[in-house]
Image (cartoon, rainbow, N blue to C red; front, side, top):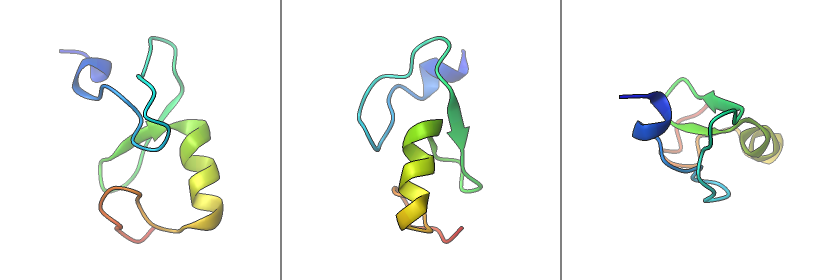
Length: 54
């Protein structure tokens, strides 16, 4: 089973991960598009899913 088949979409933008997508996994294990999570973390210093502090 591939990484992209276990993580179907970005929780921030809700778009599907595609082959070649740049993704980022936080310390808590949640995965996002790299660009989405970079923008998110400029304003909020916690995971969008579990609110774990970063």
